[in-house]
Image 1: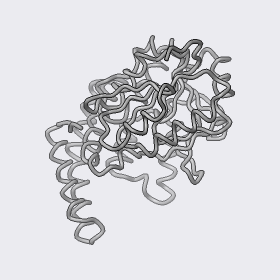
Image 2 (image 1 turned 180 degrees about the vertical axis):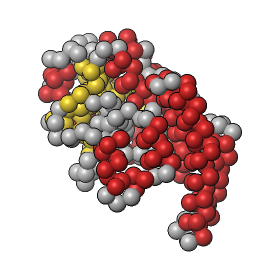
Image 3 (image 1 turned 30 degrees about the vertical axis):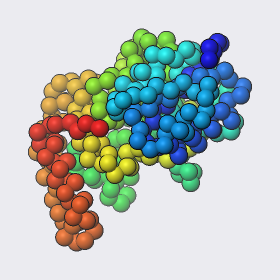
Length: 319
């Protein structure tokens, strides 16, 4: 169906979350009657009943059916390639848009042409805030203290550390931030074209932060606006059992690529060395202790060892 005067194109990347994406699409269709929209779904070779669910919507959707899992970044770029909206709204399939719609949110970015990325407030279904909706860019200090040594899990001190290194923002205030979450981000098409879209050499996570970094470096602002609140289940695809090892490994490989691109090759090399020399032995040791204490299963220990083997040889895991 040929569409004209499209203001916003929604791009949704789906992988085996048929139940969630139905709620996502329904929420968009029910909330955005005041805005001319296009909805594009890029399906990454789902094996659940996603095809039946998506086909149900007929001409209301445009679907790209991939024959293999292309990953988030490449799938988003596929969506961009057929998008005709003046603004592109990337939303995860496990998000639910508010009934009030995005008219005011959209108006904010239309009235502020210096904004390159606009992110809403993200909350869990129970209303609790997801701090990833406004965050600082990753640093080696944060990686060492929080990802490797996991000091952010300590009571009181951990909260202070998290606020200092990752989430220093006030979440009830419109403000410039370093990065927003790729689970829900609105970007003008002209800005995406200038930036060249998502970097496709990211395997899992980091691509949204890297895009925000590039857009900020080109002179635009990345802005958090809590006037739009989006419900996000968070990690519906990544929680699938078959994805556990792939995501854990590719997370770190993508992390190194982020530092290569946004910081320096030296930072990327430091990151790789720290994962191999510190993260691997620490994570395996913790897994062994938890297994001995019966807090983890033997299968969990096997997964931990498998992840360590892949990272030791810095070998990505395919879909």
